Length: 312
Image 1 (tube, rainbow, N blue to C red):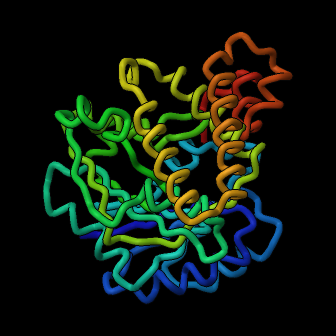
Image 2: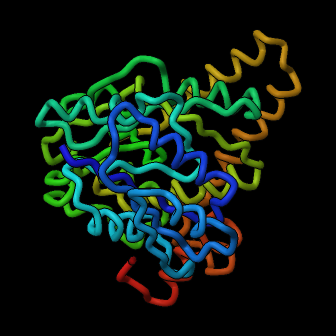
Image 3: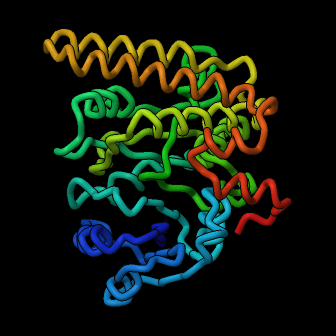
């Protein structure tokens, strides 16, 4: 089985060397690594070109698109299985590649995503959130799971993921241009196309973010817009139940630990997320100015407002 691995980068100089070293020490070697870079102005390119197997592809920063950029890189690769990592996701051990490709022994599997473990410097809220969203138990999902799992049926992340090439091509690849969640959308296409999704908890990366309230607001604004734009896939599939369960879990743990200040901050964070999601759900009523204030992806909206449609 030939394996390709794709890493989108932007000013990854402080991270990329460690990541490429970790990939060179895996129990299963990848055959090629494609770094697709959005005009980094640090030493990202110089570091990448020192590593064997790395093909460095530069693109204009203004043309980066979550779906289009990844799709372009995918189509430059030649692996039977194509892996994606973000520049700030570090394999937790030397068996990451081995574990994330293992489920492809089942011919029905189109996509596998791995487990994200919070960094040591993550806030307690972030650690609990990652623990809730990325549990230690693997799972397999198909079309029949939608009535029980709802939106969780499509849960996937390109922070650490793998795709079967024929299934990706047959499904049409990542949509572009796309505001966010290109991974969730293609996962939905796979599910409705009769394929199987796998969450492989043994395939672990270290990855987390300590987002500000404004960043949480913007992320949830974008998610709500994405859901509205793709309502044909997600109509009558609620994300509310899953969200409430996570809030109960995180808040309950913080209170048990007597982290009352963190609990208060988490309530404020939930408020920011809720407000962002509500505004995003009504984005069609907002002016361009307000959308640009609310969004976390101004580049996408600039592409849309300028009539750009090619994506990559």
